[in-house]
Image (cartoon, rainbow, N blue to C red; front, side, top):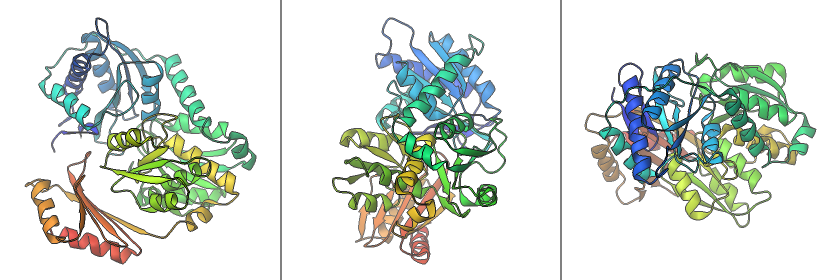
Amino acid sequence: MSLLMSVSGIRGVVGRTFTAQTVRRAAAGFVAALKAGGAAPGGAPRIVAARDSRPSGEGFLANTVGALAACGCEVHCLGIVSTPCAAAHVRRTRAAGGMILTASHNPPEYNGVKFITADGAAPDAATAARILDFVRAAEDVPSAAATKIDPSAAQEAIRSHVADVLACVDVARIRSRAFHVVLDSVCGAGGEEGAALLTALGCRVTHLHADPTGVFPHSPEPLEANLGELCETVLRVDAHVGFAQDPDADRLALVDERGVYIGEEYTLALAARNVARTRTGVFAANLSTSRMIDDVAAAAPGCGVERSAVGEANVVEAMRRTGAILGGEGNGGVIDPRVGWTRDSLVAMAQVLDLLAAAGTSLSDQVSRMPAYAIVKHKVELPGEGSGPVLERVRARFKGERINDLDGLRIDRADAWVHVRASNTEPILRFIAEAPTRATAESLIGEALQAL
């Protein structure tokens, strides 16, 4: 299993490809890249360091902090907080950048590093490539300081993050509904923040797996197969909605009041529907995101959609270029520039609850108002020949059809599409298709798989 280095950062298997040396070199390379870019001329760059709750993260964070100190940085260590919280703290405190130890939704044997730029965003593709070049060239550096977590700074970061999210919705209206919410935080980094937000919104919270132990009670990716307990609990306690975070709390999946898994694809579409009630502008989404976002924009005068390559940084670049009012990805990640430039499960929760409060309806009713599509996702191990030859065979298979090669290959038909690309976070090829029926989507996946 190789170490994965991409626009999404660095990820690997703990003890095999991802080690203490990996994070020390990552820190040294990141600082070198910042200094080469002119950060903190003549002074010590201030870097925010944080992690998700994975048990391996404690040691990796210590090595990161020590390496940053050895490189002459002033380090603000927040400990366990969500990725959007740490990123927002970078921007709020005018730090030169941030390093977050997280493997997001990957299985527990993984860990990783997400880099954050001074404006609180994941670096764009060009900046990420430059940072990774410095990381590859970096030498190992010894840890020069013990990890000193600042609890007051962490609490202030959480309070500020929650306050920024609350400022984007009608708190009084949401509170008037007295929603009962079941939140599954998968023993990740977002439990404290998620509960604080929901409490501020007047919700009664049934909190599953709230403690940030990092011992995931189920596979950490918020997919239907992993959320049976959440669905059952929503039905058993008669809740209005169920929310599932991933370990670093940048993604959110939905369960309706009937205990039915709604999924991640609806998260961005419903958030956009809510924002479009009061604002006009562009929504940004990647090529693998459902066309529901296009339907939402088409129904809202003055709204449109800008598509980007897959990856949070690519969506953010499209948002900045177009002045988008909201962006995100079909994995349940919603980005609101008023809060920050990262995907944020708290933003998603607040926007969905605001929509339900404004409409006076249930989540299942809101979902029923969306055009019905079936999305099928399939993944296979990346072949030894790499993705290039496979994509060329896919191109040949769909010759003469409408093809977008911005990121892998997306083939668009009148009422359906299929997207084939190499993952930024795992050594796999992803196949995603959307069509009016599951059978049609599966057929498209089957056509694309013939390229293997």
